[in-house]
Structures are given as structure tokens and as C-alpha cells.
Length: 76
Image 1 (tube, rainbow, N blue to C red):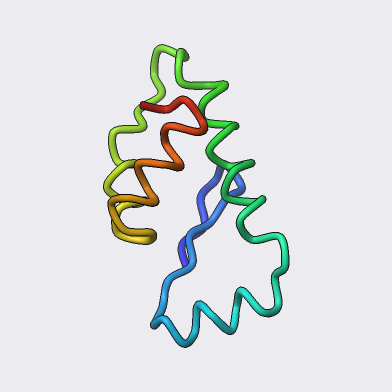
Image 2 (image 1 turned 135 degrees about the vertical axis):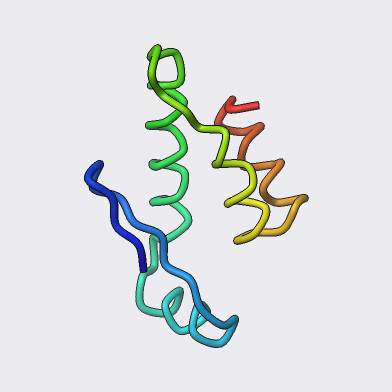
């Protein structure tokens, strides 16, 4: 788990572990959309760098789902 000073974190692990987390955090996908929508609202700030975001989403969700998430939240 990694947590930032912006008050968000990233949790990773094996597919089995992530599935167990999903069983206990019912709104996990909603939290991801909330996170992405916050970045979408801030993407025009002069010092905000979100170049790392697509790569992270590709790693976590796979390319197709990551692309869909970025499109739906207008981060592409």
C-alpha cells in the first residue's frame, strides 16, 4: 500500500488478495471513479503532473479497462 499527502492510496497484491479486498469494500469502483474525477477537475492546474496515471491504470486494470476509465472521466 502507498499513501500520499493528497489523502489517497494505492493498494496492490495478488488477484486473490484483491478479490478479497473487493468483497469487503463494496464501493471500490466508485472510489476509483471519485479519485479520477478529482484529477479531472484539477488537470488544468499549472503544476499538476498526471503523466503517471495511464501507466498505473494499465498495470492495475489492463489496457482496455484503463483506457475506458480514462475516457469516461475525460482524462484522455
